[in-house]
Image 1 (cartoon, rainbow, N blue to C red):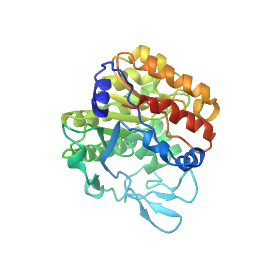
Image 2: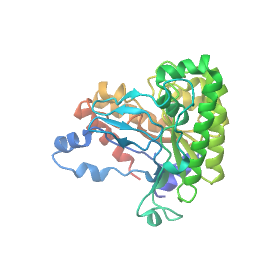
Image 3: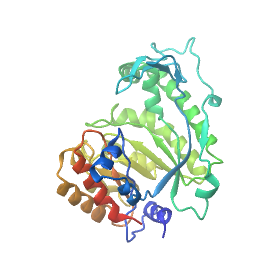
Image 4: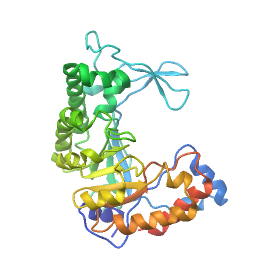
Length: 338
């Protein structure tokens, strides 16, 4: 079995002798590890089971100057500090009057140069097409976060029209991926925070669920699996995201309310695959190397029962974690090489 075979087995809830994994690094953490190990040899031990082979640029930023960019919807972003700051939303009022709404043609597609080599029946890795920021995320990017939360309570008609417009664009983006011969489409939409679903389960079911159901159906119609990244707690809507066809939930942060991965596995592990689960807010930055090793062992042992699991940090390795802990993650993951 190659990497792709192991991922396909996991998605189809087939137990295998090894656990597929992904491991990434942000903010120069890989360079810190080069210095820790004294060479780059450690990098060659990491064998990613997945590869991104195409995608849609759903933001399309245009630089204004050294500090500011505008996205395709007209929102102005300040980029000189992290996190990036929404300086001026495209729609400061709950109205589309005078707004220059983008067309699907404005969102370009990229495809890997070696697409013919890395895809198809002989592919060695499971291949993914990225579909960018999601419907809810784009809505707050366009309105501003506080404005959008008010909209979903006090301006329901406008809120629904905004979501409908974004859903139509999203369906167009999925269609643009039709001829990319990948295994899955990766979506992203952060519905949760540390406490639960941001707009509450009932409003999520009313406003967000039916629109994503259409998008997932369109992806499945192409013969592609559906993967969605989502931060925070979605415990209250797990049955709903399964119902609308989500094949893989990515991130699975263990720290937010109700997101203990072992409990999620017990309740839903035969219906959906979990990708992630190693705590990026807890275990990696604040545990000991020994605790990291034990947690990885527990995840591999328990979450992989009956398939349905890909090991990964809930977020890529982040700056600020002790380098010894970063190395402990590498050491714990690489014995899982396929």
